Image (cartoon, rainbow, N blue to C red; front, side):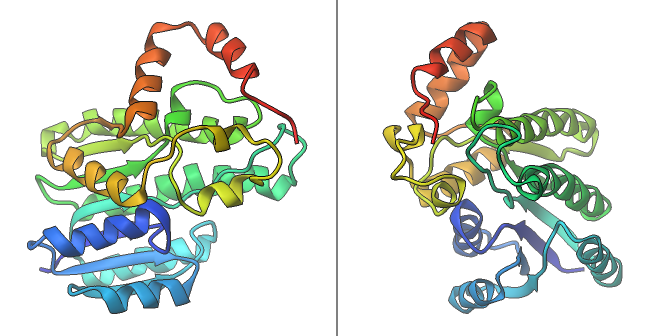
Length: 257
């Protein structure tokens, strides 16, 4: 039975760099399944890899795509040595001011699709397998003007922690990766950089370093992974300070578009 890594959100950002890192260091992986809507980027990535790659240019918010992936798993019956759910996006703005399909779309992709992919994969993950769920440091506290995105990532963090406990008897470790701002196209999609957006003021890590650190923490079985001073500091601060103080402090950093 072939041993695979399954990675969603593989066409860009941390997901793409995780695929490259898998190709570089995971000798026990026979095949990598990469998933994203953008076929051209997936094919370009596949051409760069040494490991055999299966490309899935699908929309994970489409139930038919989920059903297709389910059928493929049932037919191939692989060992999923590593599952990485990196697909997700965020939009900056007041709740209710964004297009409704953007607000609900964040929930469908960041929460529903992640849950579906994980549940579909669980029967195929062997003892000692690893699951990486990309959350965000925004999961640690509410984020005014980034409220829906932060709420979806709080779901991912809570879900990951619970799943980690449930899978402990099978020696499957689940790691929630909670990066701070990363220098990827995510920020351009989330909000314009010429409008005084508070994210522009924060230090940014590289997706390469985030991917390397995330997989190292996964191999070590850490339940939560943060990289860099901003994400690590915010994780500590969110444990120490009450939410109302964090919200008050956040106001000074935010500017409405």
